[in-house]
Image (tube, rainbow, N blue to C red; front, side, top):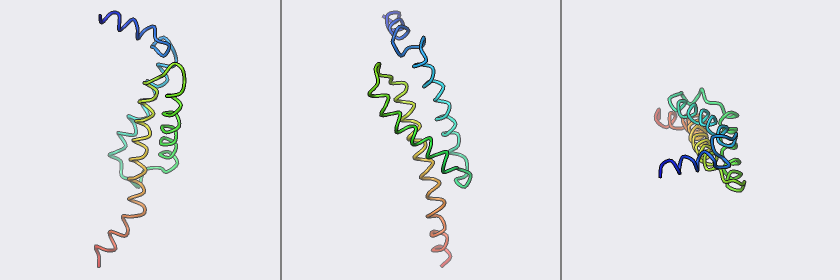
Length: 108
């Protein structure tokens, strides 16, 4: 049973013998790095970088569902990229635009 599932994975059109497997697998590094940046102070985050990560995730998530063969590894890594990018952007926006108002209200 396990052998047949491994053989099916190995011979899949988006399996480990193809670039369709390895490109999204290495792309997980970007999402992991973005998760590691959750500990970074928001003022050190970059709008252009996080917009690029988010846009890449959203665009390629859609693309990965319409190509043949379906590449669920590509889909999942791009959903993770979009999610981490949106979270980082929300942290940056909250810090840049809403943090000052809260400080001003607290002083009054």
